[in-house]
Image (cartoon, rainbow, N blue to C red; front, side):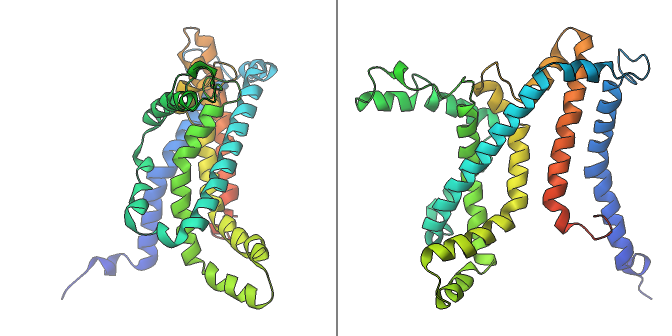
Length: 292
């Protein structure tokens, strides 16, 4: 008599087993890290642990460093997602018939393999005052010297950070929108709308864009979270003030003054709370009913 593993582990048991394994590898470690950071910021663990205290929270929230870093990071992430989404939508709709084949489709995968450090170095070479764009504008006679090119890096508005992250995100979003355009049968819905009397602009505004953006919302939320907590590109292309939230946390953690370290963990807790809330809101419709 042949005995298989399926007889010992029926389908519901296997599903629960894989779910428990996934939770143990992907969910439990971040939650443990978040719990340790919270305990450290409250004085329960670490080199300065002397019992529960809210002193670090009160001290950090009284200063403007955290609020400024959070506001700046949120603004940079929002502008990056808006710019990348707009460019990717325009390009994917204009090139969708040729986007899925040929060398152009393969080239879209190249930026996905670039680490943040490499992207920042490329951005420095192109966006700097004496970079490629500055020299190109000087050769065309638009500026008197390459140094007259507008400052796109190390500026207080984070333009270099936005441009570098958008350049990495646009190819990925183009592939996403092209795939969604085919899977959501948008051409068929558009043709149906035109037979009902809708013009091209109405089809774009009422059919194409709502379907694409609604289905892409979870991916756009993850992109927002990634830019919000980015480190390499803001470190190499951003100004010292204001600074992104990841730079603030790293600076406070690496200082010789150990009294700054609980504040670094506090910043990490605030960042993690914002990101987890954003991810939950983006994916709540895909969770089981008993979870939401």
